[in-house]
Every structure is written in structure tokens, then in C-alpha cells.
Length: 593
Image (cartoon, rainbow, N blue to C red):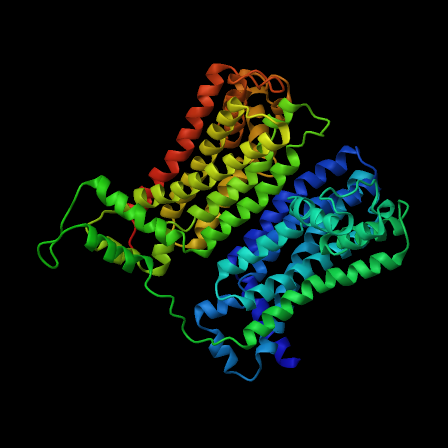
């Protein structure tokens, strides 16, 4: 145990010097604390409701810190080649793994405890007193939640030989169990219902305690459900609130939740213990394959002679070879799988003929369902496009061929956009199939509007990712730049709603407030609408509404003025092209030595 503690102390100091970790902690604070402060100050919720609302936001946001801290714990040492040096010192692989777990868990707990302490101050300011017992009961469960997910992450980091496979496994695990994405309710519940009732339709119930016994038992197989019910029961027991049921079901649920962290950790340890840590030979890299492809495609009359061909032919050759390379990439394939897992069940659940919402509103309001999957797809496909070759060192080999840096950027852009468009065509076909099956009609106008909006959004976001990939010199900076762009322009969790809109209001009115104008029936006055539509997410929403209004399904949306619609289209075009142009300019002037 002393050796594990020694490893933990050294790793703790190492993690605290990591900029990605500090960036994730700051990001968590920016996403969580402003909304917490505003809700506490508003007084719209009782303290009991507020203490149960806070974890709903923090459950997702805390995983950003967990992933940043834990994903690189073991596999990072393998990638850097330092794990063999560490294991040559007195200590076992078990000491190494548990030392990493202790260090990463301590960092996560410390960061989350600081943020929760600030949130407790907001509670005291908003409600007159801090409600220490109730608040820190909830906070204790959130710290346990972070520790369990850290164990899952470190376990995956030990089990896989790539950082990106670790992240992919973490995302897939969260999507599979999270109630926010519908995989459990759309896929798992119907399977259990088929086994116990012979029907794919699970029974409806108001509370879990009122459900049939088999429903209560199967729901408890979801560790995140167990966590939520146990935490709520504990908070309501401390008060204010009235707890539901006795402690035994929640105690068993807590055991299931703890096993959720222990099983991946044990799996990772077994894999790590049996792993050969020698150099892996993954075969020829992309640059080598591209060399062969171009030498086969471009005739040469003499060895070493530079032969140039038409620009379009070179770009097509680069794009075709990069497409084959990308489809062998675990991150790209994982991004496609995660996108389908996120979007497919959610779309099936949203498009429901039995819903209380009218048909037109269901068909036109699926946009929030697919925004997150499209963002995930664009990032997974585009972030590694150019900078991945710089990190691997194959970019200089590629540029030694008869191609230019512009050809590389355009070829990468063409192949990555092609992947996204192909996935979106499948998803659009799936949406149309769901509409046909569940509503009994084809609705071709809706199909065309959906196809136009989804393709436009996917192409724009992928172009941003590829452009930023060309502009920076490491994968981590590419991810940071992409997430920074999202957080700047997003209107819900980003700075656009909390900072940019108030600044626009201050410029025109002298008051640091304008957020309510975005939710008004007419979208606010002209001085607000056009600056606000400089956000591509706002512009995308207007393009969405305009397309559905044009095909006759825009009754539930505000009327979109033609000029504002064209302005929004222009913003999307600029948002797609400017990052690519800037990325090319940065890449063209970069020293690749």
C-alpha cells in the first residue's frame, strides 16, 4: 500500500500541472455556477426542489472533469513509453493502477468540492441560510458519483491501448445508462417488457414504487437510476421533504452503483496485468499508404522527379486515401456509433403518435434531439483531420509528394465532410422511416426540410472542426479550440446567453440584460436580432424554422422574415468557411519540423 501511495503522490503533483485538467475544472465552473446562482437568487424553487435540481445539471457536467482527469491515467504512460520505467521501480502493476486511482480520485473530489462549496454560498445568499445538512448530503452523493466514474475511467484507461478508445468507451457507457439519451428506455426496457409480458410496450406508472415488481427489479439494474433514487431518498430524509419507501431498496441500489465502478476497474486491472507493454506495430500509417496511393495514381518518368497534376485530381486522391484511413480510425467509427446511439432512440421516442403534442409540432421540434449527436459526429470526424498527421509525424512524408498544403487541407475537408454527409443521409432516411411507420404517411415536404437543415448543420460544424484541426499543432489544442468555440456561441450552457447577449443589450440600451428578448414571440427588436444571429446556433435555428415555414409546417414557430433567413444562411456559410481559411493560413505558415 505504501508503494501505491508513493505513486499516488507523484501522480497527484503531475496532474495538477496539467492544463487540460485545470481547463476542465474552469469549464465546469463556467457551465454550472452561473445558472446555479441565478436559480438560487430567483426564489422560484423551494430549497427541497433546488437541492434535487442541482444534481441534474452537475451529473453531466462533472463527467467533463472526470474524463479530463482520468482518461489518460494509465494509457497516457503507455503512449509516452514511461510505464515501463515506472514498473521497473519497486512496485507491481496493481500498485501502479491503484496509485493512479487514488491520485485522480483526489483531484476530482477536490475540484468538485470547491465548486460545491461555492454553490453552497449561493444557497445561503438566495435562501437566507446554507442548509448545511441537506446540501452536504446531496454534495456527498455527488462526490461519490465522481469517485465511481473516476474508477470507471481509470479502469478503461488501463484496459485500452489508446486514449481515444478510452474516451469512446466512457462516452458509450454514459450514453447506454443515462436517462437523458433514451437508450435504456427505448432499447433495454422494451426487451425486459417482452420477456415478462410478451409485449414491447413497458407498463406506465407514476412512481417506481407503484410499478410491478419486475419493473422495479429491472430498473434497479441501471446504476445511474440507483444513484438518483438513493440520493433523493437521503436528501428527503434529512429534509425538507418526505422520503419514499424504506432504506433497504436504496441500500441495494447503492451496492449496484458501487459495482458499476468496481467492475470496469477490475476489468482494466486484469487487462493491464496481462498486457505486453512493448512497442505496438499498427502497420503502415496514413502517410505511408498515401505515398503508395499517389505513386500509383500519378505517373512518374523518373525516380525522384516531381510530377504535378491538376489540383482537383490531387485533392480527390488525397480525399479518397484519407477516407479509407478515417474509416479505420477508432475515434471516427466510435463517433458514428455514438451519434447513432444518441439520435436513433431519441428520435423514436420523440416522434410518438400517442403524444399530447400535435403532429406538426412533433415533426418540426426534433431539432434539439439531434443537435448534440451532430456536434459529437463533427468533432469525432474532424478534430484529428490535419493535426493528427502532425502529431504522428507523417505530414512531412505526405508533403514530400507532389501535393501542396492547400491540397492536404481540402482533401481532408472533402473526405471528412463526405463521412458526415453519408451518416446524415442514413439518419435522415431513418427519420423518414420512423415518420412512415408511426404516422402512416411520407410527408415529403418535412423530409426535404429535415434533410436540408441536418446536412447544413453537419457540414458547417465538421468544417469548423477540420479548420481548427489545421490551425493548431496538437490534438488536445484542437479539442480545446473546438469546445471553446462551442462554449462561446452556445446559447444554453455557453457564454453567448450569459455574456454576449447582455453586452449587446448594454451597447444599445445601457442595461446589462437582453437574454429575455431571445425568447420573445418576435425574437426581439432589430438591434438585438441581427447581432444575436451572429451565433451559428441561433442562425441555425432560424434556418430550421424558415425551411419548415417554407414547406407549410411552420405554424408552431415564429414567422421568419426572408431577410433574416438569408442573413442566417450567410452566417452559417461564413462560419463554415472562415475557420477553414484561417486553418489553412496557419497550416501554410507552420514549421512542421
